[in-house]
Length: 117
Image 1 (cartoon, rainbow, N blue to C red):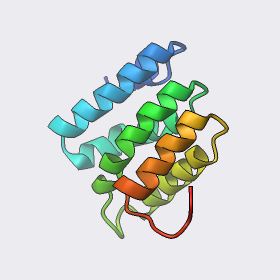
Image 2: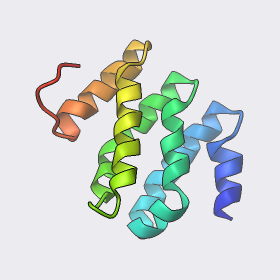
Image 3: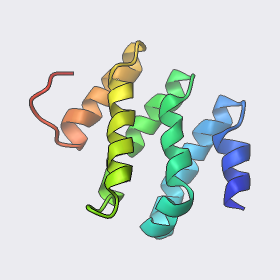
Image 4: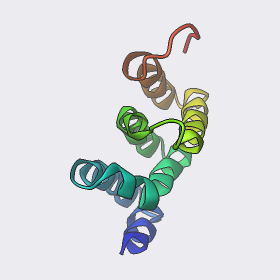
């Protein structure tokens, strides 16, 4: 069932479906265990950072603080690395709104310091 949701919404040709998938990710995080989310959904959620539609990438930025809180080191070191790469990709976006959303998350929500957006 998870694969069907990922395929039909997370990987849909419709950007509205992909945005709905991100809304579903937030609900899944709220109602399911973090372990379950990381095992079945995390990777598909993370893939939306590469979405061709800026609004989908901006919506993903809003999930970043929640996704980071799910990571427990050293067990989830790979997830942290992938999340950091996704954020770096978003911060280098040519779309101004995506870049600004990622920079806001970088400084305000994730607590990174030093490097300027």
